Image (cartoon, rainbow, N blue to C red):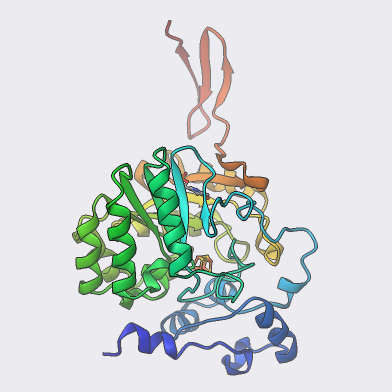
Length: 346
Ligand SMILES: *Cc1c(COP(=O)(O)O)cnc(C)c1O
Ligand code: SF4
């Protein structure tokens, strides 16, 4: 069997190499790709061809990426919240540490579209050392979330260097890895990689699936290997128009994730990222999806629906309205819309 580097090296990176059904207007798509790179690896291409539009929309460039006049380059104000390059310190006790600029597939809706896969995302041994130094000096940080790009595309050696350096910092309690690799290039989750990861517990992985068609034998095997190594797995799904913006698709996705031992963590409203306006849905769509999950299926299958506030305000949960009135009594609706009263405590 081919190894993951070989598979990745056979990715489609120019519009002219796309299969005919996705080719569109080549000169336009070339302009799109010059600004926002494309990478569709053979594994994900095969899935696209099996599942269709909900997957092709995530991976195939679209002329609309260049005509977005509503959204912002850096919607979460990450650059201004970085005390050192590629380390975002927004919340009191945790940071987001970007350690790799590449991904196994460039998602068209990416929040960090302004820089992933581009030369402008300057990550080097020097920036990583600066990040480590910052963490060493900031005792309030007890949770480090390493992301990118995709950290699991680093070589085993580089990744182990980062993990072991973080583990040497005594006040860091937990390490989290954000990675789409279990979904878009599951063959990267090798026994060797897992044997490295499990040396650095407590280590959590939050992966990213958006559609039930992404759950395959391969991704299930990858998640199984990670889970067997005691790595708790979560999923951060993005709500995307034409991909998963309906109640049944999300319910099926959340249930399928539990079957491969991944706990749904967040369901994100799309960020206001320049080049992704055509993916954004109405807030009410997400609330409707949540109403159709809560109570109607396992509580384990229910993620937190959240919007990440522009200008660095952080993630804010959006919850359907169950409370009708709260004074001496709580009057509230249940998931079926029936009304109940609870006498408040003291
Ligand atoms: C999302 C995010 C985190 C982690 O948030 P949790 O709600 O703890 O998962 C940390 N820092 C930044 C900058 C983030 O965007
Ligand atoms: S894998 Fe994550 S960081 Fe990479 S392009 Fe997709 S959403 Fe962006």
